[in-house]
Image (cartoon, rainbow, N blue to C red; front, side, top):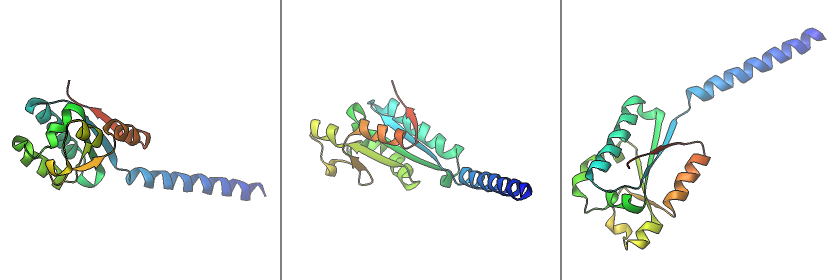
Length: 143
């Protein structure tokens, strides 16, 4: 009887270990990047960080969402032609760019004023909190 119990315990431990290793192997790095700064220098730095994450991890190993609110909303405006190409390239690689609807209302910005690949979220800060609560890593950028 003791042998059966010991065998069951050992088998259970091996199963837990196997599932744990499989889960770790399939785990994506998930990073939420908060953007609340203005200007080309700050935005280039943020896009550099996003590109560096993409280089450090294989494309299927990383998921990135950039959340712009406050001063950072300008990054996602169609009028921001200086950043357009870099943003489009990042979006094509799977980076999600999200704009805060609260900031949009405050600044009188519509969805049509944003690049077509941008999604909107009800609240930029709430989106960052939700991501962190879901286990995403947080990257604060800028000033």
